[in-house]
Length: 319
Picture 1 (cartoon, rainbow, N blue to C red):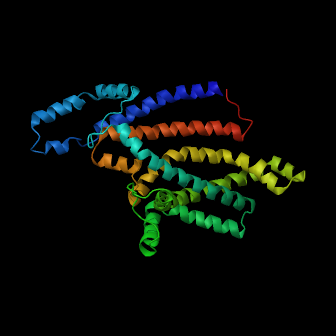
Picture 2: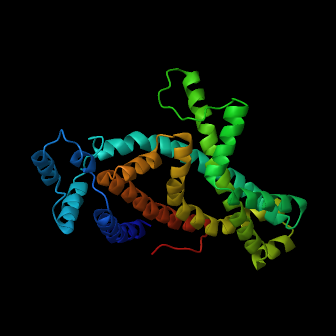
Picture 3: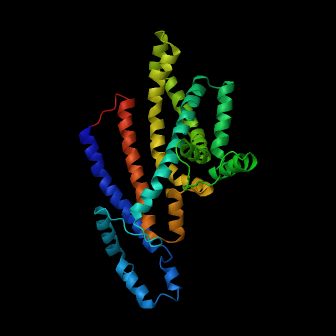
């Protein structure tokens, strides 16, 4: 296992380098200038603007700028935001806990919905429960998050006045009241993301369980007289989770990207809103850092999925 992990980490290095080259080149060739506001500001002399651009290396060739950026990244220096003049790593660490909390809770909710509903529907195919579950899954997967988010705001915030629709970090309460205020304002973003992912994953869980439940070893277990619950949990669900783990691992970085819309709707101060504001301001260091973090998440969750394969299926060995 140790050798396998080391080999996978070594393979990840050229992958990350290739991704960083593509990202940096695309951002460097993209239209727009991060100092466009300074260029139109008459209070900033032209020589000051030129010195500032030279100090940041914006007029250097792309390959020289990339090498400088890469060496700085290896030293742990992610650069400074052109807009806020704050180190990029500090900006990300300020936003990351909120994003991780909201997305983490939504994925737990999605799994809590998809696993029991998908397994139960697959063990009773074409029953009333299966038909209702399939219908709700199709509806939940078809509705975009911005639509369900607005519906929840209209229902729970405007009509019923139960939940706040703007996420706030300036909560002055303390103790249990502080925790409850944070939970209340996170309920709707978590529900929007969790229900959307849960609806999609329910279909995959049902399909995976249906594929396994027809295999010979399951029929043999039934012939031996084993209880149906034990057959389902030990012989069906565990093997059916292999494609589901692949799906969850590969979609996890996409969830971070998809959460951008939800964060904008509920004004969640997370990584998504940071990326949107950086794109609008052409803040290249922030855009590069956030997208590079997303790329690292893809490789990391792929590694987690490969490790889980061996735990789910003993036939898989790591060499």
